[in-house]
Length: 382
Image (cartoon, rainbow, N blue to C red; front, side, top):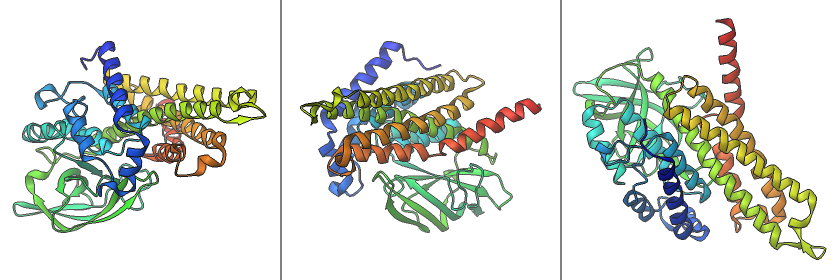
């Protein structure tokens, strides 16, 4: 069980938000997002996150972490959402570290997890493939053994942070299309690896990746056996899904507060817009919807930490509610800001893009609603 107390969680939340409010202004965000640094995120910021212990908050103490769990990761991701943090927390700290901790060999855990905690290793999760939609078991990439090496061929869809990752966490079938799905740690600069770099909807950079005879060492396979990892990948994607839900909660809180502040300053008919009852109702709707998402996301994070039987379904429910809330809060904020909400000079439009991406990453609300329905129908039949 994670060892963080309620007081320690509050301290973590306060330290994150205090540091980011002082050091991650919208002006700094624009400089990073618009090419102030070629990678599209801040190396200096990443080093500071490592120094403050945030990158290792959910890693074992033996790896230089703090021994926290998904709730602590959720606190980090919510703070990142409040400031639209550009650094690759999702791929490295949530998914990369999660995969290595779940199924990595002892040598992989001892070597790689401390590198993540100290900010020396960036990882991008490359699982989705063209034509897969949101299906988690659609894997056509193949890794074949060639003497002491493995050779990977296949295509992977856009992955956040892949353009700058040291290592790509790649799913592929071992041996043939009928083989088990395994995970592999592929150096981004390996021969036979080709990246097509592009921005995501919210401006964060990533890449689609193709593998054409990419050769890696046999020990680059995550884990020490050839067991099929689809079940673990399912858990890993749930981990990613709830992390972006937490991120969306932070963004919604920032958007709601920014909209309140904006309506207090804008005047119409000699009084602030915040005095108009119809606009007050819209603000209440935004606040209530944000709180609904926050509550269900917190419950899902706790269920994962407690290894509760219904934890996966709690994650799916959180994704459904967060998608609904993100759409309502984002669209209302744009509307209440009027024409200014559509410009790049105000943060609100960028928050809307971040919320839209959070809504769709790892599956949209409709996708998870269908999964909940299918699971419920299966229980009735059983």
